[in-house]
Picture 1 (cartoon, rainbow, N blue to C red):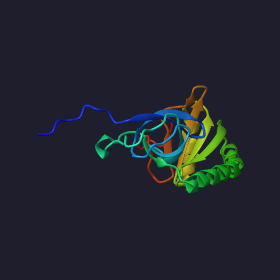
Picture 2: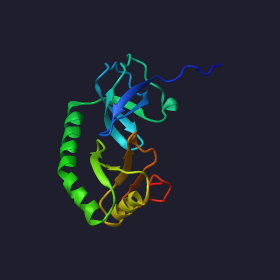
Picture 3: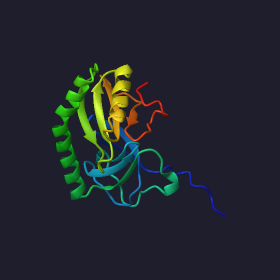
Picture 4: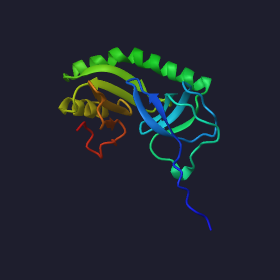
Length: 181
């Protein structure tokens, strides 16, 4: 007869994102990982490169049953670190184009940064604004123009605003409303 374990899956702090976010994530690797290492995490946005803020002891991975929320998948390979650097450069090159689009579309938004997930499947547009009609207009316009899978992420003085809209594929993370609430 087996007994249910009362131990909680190991969780550690990570920092990720162009507009830095710190959060706890569940460890899904058996590797020992030192504090400060580049790691690959699975967030609600996709796979991203993150910095580990706490060391991970060897053999402390969670089981698949315990996997929830953001997951620490593995130590980042040199290729993944290089890919992240190339995607950052791509965002720097695209920034003026996105600024021009926002200006041409007459939106009262200030674009502050761009970011791409590690697999380049999602572009995040960080805009300095409360969640409001211009965030919604930007999300809808991006979708209407067929500009890919894009998430509009409003940012305020406290950092990223919690709820976001992802558009470009005909679906969004806001339950179908395709706008910032």
